[in-house]
Image (cartoon, rainbow, N blue to C red):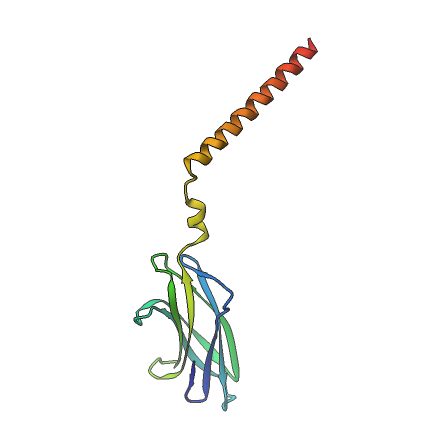
Length: 155
């Protein structure tokens, strides 16, 4: 959804195939288009991630020099204390002094709290540990028997 005022359009491009995980950075491209004015102007771009109730989870901001088109990749750290859910990325373009919203846009993203690190940190089951211990023990017995056999053949 994109709204334009004062001849500037803001657009967010969120890669739908990119999995956003809690504890990592969410990245998305922001493109600003000035439709009538080719004079350079500075605008303030504020990007936020909000939950379903509209509460801001995290945000960032940049001042961007805009002539006809400006584009940049925004990066926001996703806190680890979130629930897996759909969140909204909101971009607002304001005048440099920040008093007037010129344009805004939003996109939805899914944030997954089951990170790869969580999967690596899980303890192996006792059965797996027992099987690994038996395999290591058998390998050691086999190697010792080979070493003894080689030592006897040299004598």
